[in-house]
Length: 180
Image 1 (cartoon, rainbow, N blue to C red):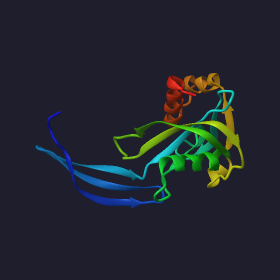
Image 2: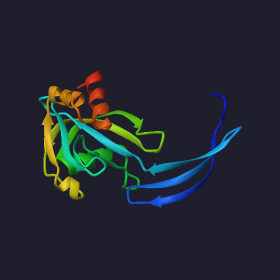
Image 3: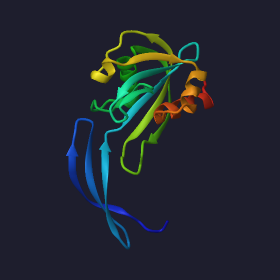
Image 4: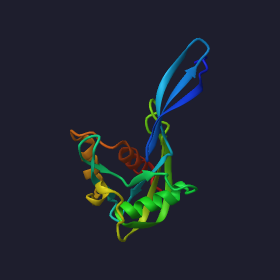
């Protein structure tokens, strides 16, 4: 592709606790256009694996789908100066009540580059020790922690309901090259 685009101007449309929305004027060699973009600080997610090779998941209600979903612990980078690893450790403790002594970064991915600049960093956590949960917000307070076998996770992927992409990518990365 030889056409070079660049953002020439931005106009704030919405500011919220979790994300902002801005309209971007993009100019190229032969045209210009506008795109609305969700601006996000980034996030982390954790594939916690216990000694039986089960994956820790959270079952919680999600308003966009108006149903309960299976997800791995995840959260926004909303503490200034906090590293992605520190945020992952915080989220694992808050959402599942777990601490882990072995951590491995599995990768980073763009959540949906057509409409948001959010980047997710996924970690694997092993040598997990259970503690006390500290759920944040009404959905997490009503959530439930479950430990799923690889077969149970596989059934989620082949079921009729859509699966959380972070769960899918995280579990795929763990299954492709665990060095534990």
